[in-house]
Image (cartoon, rainbow, N blue to C red):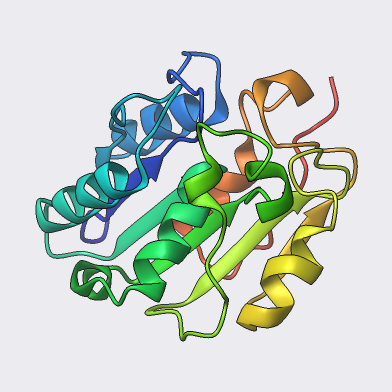
Length: 197
């Protein structure tokens, strides 16, 4: 194997890292391949604090191991967490080589939930600190405006929009998801929907 990479996998609102979720599956697969994987339980996932989560993001990036490529995979509220960190110019983001934003929720949806209203995306008028890709469902109830229109186009990043994938959660069948593992190992691979069945 080449130099082990470091992966930071970040969950979203109300996600208590269930064993069947694709993020848990991904962390297990990457670890088995010899990579450094951090999949932290972020504080108060049911009632998260934006500044608290930003502090956790900075801490985990500072503590990332190894000399290989550093990759972040952020789902849902953590996808917009990354955007807040970039908008604020968080220096630790420069340690990251590439990022996958998975199913970022829209501000219109977040604003309806007091627990996460502060996570509503900032104005997307900043440069991202490293190559970034977006993947989202074409029918995500947490982003009814469409993630390509709302996020990928203004940020100028590539997007894979998956039919019928919803919020890319357990509820829409996203346990094992081979395509996300493929992307983690090779950034040129497009994200695809999980196999049916």
